[in-house]
Image (cartoon, rainbow, N blue to C red; front, side):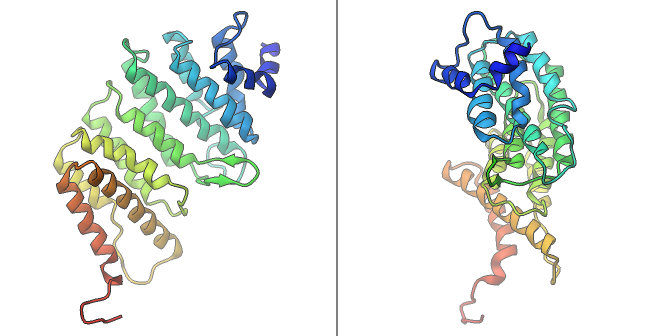
Length: 289
């Protein structure tokens, strides 16, 4: 394994794998090599972490180079304290890369499972993933987007991708999707500024659930209201930021539905909520400022 770990951190070797369409030399065991790659997810080196390690693991999963039992073992490890919950609660440290990119591996595995002729993931494992993602969404505190000199941390965007793939799993029911939607509304109201396209990534999940009619209309109505933050006059900067994040999230969802001519009643309801927020800034017909 030590020799594999050396290969897993050798960027020249990893670049050669990418050039060879992610096919490993015959003498290297696929599962052992993926395990050797996993620690790279927490590297502050963006090429090693993002362009090489993540892309290699994701493509090996897509090409089904791992057996179903190996994928399950891999995911159970990623859901644990050394990866998805690695030093959870810390802010401003490199630990966020490990947590954030663990989400992307989860998303990649769910994506492959959804499209496989025979499911790779058991219903119980997908439930474990859902529970872990919900917990992670509540416990993460480092929501930085781009980190100068280290590349994308992007924990919220990567979590949104994992939530989106999880929501579309054939093993989930409407109640599970409602739980994921509730988390999305909470994330949309985060007090940290979100300006690296997190709103669109998060809205994608809600869009797919709404467009697929995977939850009932009564739930959507209540859920939309939960995305609205009432204006009570003078607000703190954190409250103002939360409201801005939520508006951007709803705008993204509005246009995703509108562009595809989907769920016009939901589109109208979002428009009403945005009007409640922004109507005061529109000049009246009398020209009052």
